[in-house]
Structures are given as structure tokens and as C-alpha cells.
Image (cartoon, rainbow, N blue to C red; front, side, top):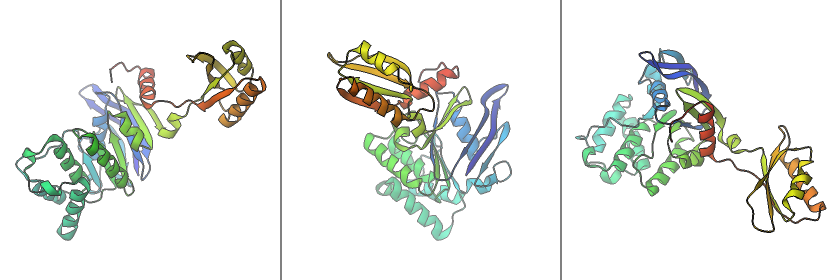
Amino acid sequence: MINVDSLTRLYGNIPAVRDVSFAINEGQIVGLLGHNGAGKTTVMKMLSGYLEPSSGSVRIAGHDLATQARQIQQTLGYLPESLPVYPEMSIGDYLDYAARLKGLRGEALHRSIRHAVEATELGARFLDPIGELSRGFRQRVGVAQAILGNPQVLILDEPGNGLDPQQNEHMRQLIRELASSATVILSTHIMQEVEALCDRVLVLSGGQLVLDSPLAKLRESRHLLLTCSADIDGTAALVARLPQIVSCDALPSPEGQTCLRLGLHPGTAMDTAAGNISRAVIDSGARLYELRPEQRNLEAIFREAVQSAGGTHAA
């Protein structure tokens, strides 16, 4: 659906985005993460055709953005971080204007506006001037214009910006529904949104892509957490002799219990290792209280990716 090859954007001699490449399949929800200044917004602007790349290429649904921008933009929805709405226009007039810019006319235009208003729950404020709306309602107007025409690709820059917790949950549900017929690229600083919505994560640092991975794979860890009743030295020596174990570190534990973090050799099946560990502990006469995979935290993964790339900005 989306193919990005060696995308680069320079401002003078300063690179905002450098040699970024990735491909996104139809129906995926992809999180685009990075500190302020990492290049996220620049990438989104280039994908939407709002900003021309200095070099590289973008193809969306088989169309080349360099030569077929109009065809792409008619099937693309874009919510920029700062939406250029017109405060003197009513919600209805603004959505009519945005729909016509996308080439919608007649019944298709009216049907699309009705769907966008219902999806974003703007019906009660349809005739209100945008300048009188709260930040949260203006954000909903932005989402409404982005989903006009049932876009094949939806690019959302901070869609939860200004929304309260209930509105945020509604927004997440809406994005899930949209993903049934659209590919979604979502940029946000809120890690919970990424974990709740995304299939895959792209991390930018210093204008470069430093991580591209399915979220489920990122959560996987090559470590098991063991809690049992044996003494710590004896248990560590016991499990360290197993061929699947590459490291064994003690963790803080309640009195009378031993907690260990066990690193596995690459290629070791976790189920096999867990079976061997539990058998060894039980055969030793100790009580096995818990043995489970360690779950990696997305925020920690993000920090590791940025630090390994030499990033130093605070989150």
C-alpha cells in the first residue's frame, strides 16, 4: 500500500529526514514515534504531498507521489498537528469546503459529511462557528475532515491532542474502525495509544529510521522470570548449568523466596527452556511459585532505540 524509498528532506544544508525507507501493508495501523525534532512531522508532510522531498520516492496504492499527487490526495486523509481551520466558518461549511477540495460532489459529498459528523459526534455542534469550539472539539473537526471520502490511507499527527480521557477512548475506537478499510499512520507522544492501537512501530531519531518492527515482536523478551523457594545461590547455580541459559541475575524478592531473571540463548524455544527450568527446580525439592516471560515496556524499547542511535533529547 505504501512504499517509501530513501526519503530525504533538507532545509538548506540541514537534513530534517535522512534516507528513510519502509513499506506498509494495507490495513495496518503503524505508530510513528520520535522525540520533538526527530522528523516525524516532516515525514508525514512528505507522505501527504504537502512537502516535497529533496530526494527519494513515495508510492501509495501504486501511484507515484512525484507525478500523481492529485490521485493520491483524493484517497488520502491527513490530520496535521496544527490544523489550518477557518474560525469564522461553521463546522458544516468547513466540512463541505474540505469535501469539495477532495473532489466530492452531489450525494457522495452529503453522504461523506454525514458519516464524518456521526463518527466524530459533531452533530449537536454542526452549525457552530469553529472559532467558538473548545480545543477538543476543534480536534474532532480535524479528524472529521481527514476521514471525508473514506480514504484508503489515513495519516494522523497527534489525533488525541486536546481530548479528555473519554474522548480519547472514542477516538481509539474510531481509528480501529477506520483501519478495517484504510491503512493508518499514527504519530503520538502517548505510548498507551500506540500499545492500544498499533500493529507496528517505526521510530525516528535525528531524522533517521532507527527501529521498524511489529509491536508483538518488540514485546517479546529473551528472558524468563523465575520465583521459587530455594536459596538464591543454589538456584542460580542449578539453572545456570542448563544449556538454554546464557545469563542469570538475582532480583529483589520477599524473604524466603528467590527471584531470578534468566537470559536465553538465541534460537532457544521459550517453552522448551521453561519446561527444563521448572523440572530442574521441582526435582531439586524447591517450590516453584512463578515462571513467566518478561514483558518489555514500549517506553523502554523506545529509549533503547533512540539511545543506541545516539539520541540525547528528553522525551
